Length: 350
Ligand code: GDP
Ligand code: MN
Image (cartoon, rainbow, N blue to C red):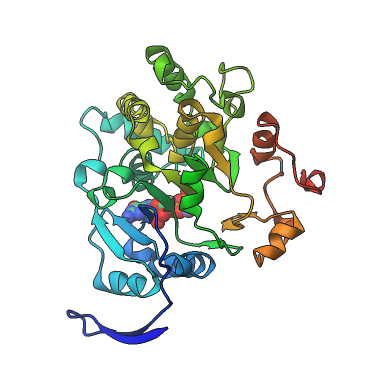
């Protein structure tokens, strides 16, 4: 490993870098992607360090950072020192982070007031709504993302619990996977009251986009009549960018955006992505990562199988695993896909 000093031209700030021996095999066109504020820098660093130590120092994939404001030099210098691939920084264009012209701002403000009164989480927040709309419809359209086919989303304050010794992007491609998740969960109904009705209207307009071998039974318990609130937790996603860039999802996002629910309700990017993945993909293209071990407040994904856990040097307690708890939807995912649940899973039910 080489040792070199790096100095930032503007700030004069100096730090030393240690370079690991580089992985020289073929790499995928893949990147990490993190939407983040400058003020989140120090809660993001442990996330990056964890992903680097557990996975990326072996593969050196790039990392794209996106922000609705300019990143500071402190931010850029510090994250670049931790990322083993190339760090890239994208400034989100205003039109991807603002109210579309057709939104009635007064109506949107009334909704926020009501949701504040009803104590709905993030219900009074404008920026959270821009964030959800951005993650739903725009992260994959940023020009810094153009050169990539695959992404792995990372947020501040997350951890990987297990070593990942294989190239996870290569795994996705070779196994025809388009969307991977670690945790699934039920959505708060109050935030997406008309999302399913809007989705059904869309399906009626565009039946050609619904895959014949879709995973409707994961998101609906009555054959599509109603939504059961199940979704993949989008703070962790490993996916193919062409899922979002393709005709089906492009039309779906535009339809949702026109309907206005990102502002008149509080539609999250997680149910939007999940419903789309469940409807537009072949069900075999959706993958549950049972081996990464993942934490985002307040839930852990921790492999129950001791063989998986020890092989991956996981540092989590299997008793804390959320996978088979009642508020999770992953037991349903196993059931509808005829997958064998790991030994001990029954003990994990709430
Ligand atoms: P939660 O996981 O639903 O509680 O939401 P977070 O607060 O973690 O936000 C989700 C992601 O969006 C994280 O990666 C945040 O860093 C990012 N994010 C949230 N709000 C903003 C914002 O106003 N500006 C920017 N640039 N990023 C944001
Ligand atoms: Mn988060």
